[in-house]
Amino acid sequence: MTGKHTTDAVIVHCIDFRFQKYLDAWLRENYASCKYDRVSLAGGVFDFEYILKQIKISETLHDINEIILVNHENCGAYGAEGNYARHKSDLEKAKEELLRLYPALDVEIYYLHLDGEFEELHS
Image 1: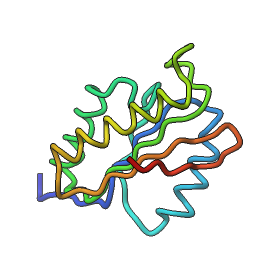
Image 2: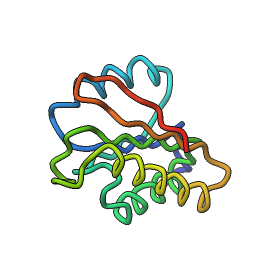
Image 3: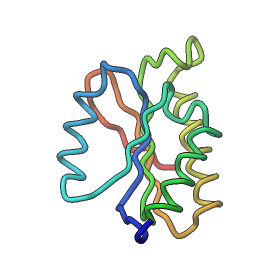
Image 4: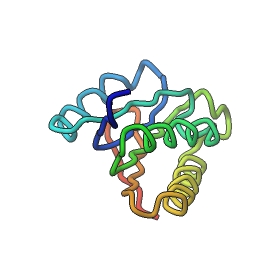
């Protein structure tokens, strides 16, 4: 390896094909001038331990400044428990843990609605 590669952020979201057009457009609009690692996993932060491993790799190898977490409405990985309150709670817990582990990084959390609206959540 010839040196550390740097990027601005790591963005974590679900694999669900229904939301990719919204995610792609949102990323172009908000992060077009940024470099970012993109992690796509069923359920977004549902499997937080796996996501945490990916974030650690991104932070270690790419010196990120920001973590963006996106969960979405009607997520099959969550099943019947995938209501708004559960997603909000999981995203807030993930943000809290990431800020504890990486206090120098910014962490943003979003809930993506079926109509493509991104709702920024504040904990």
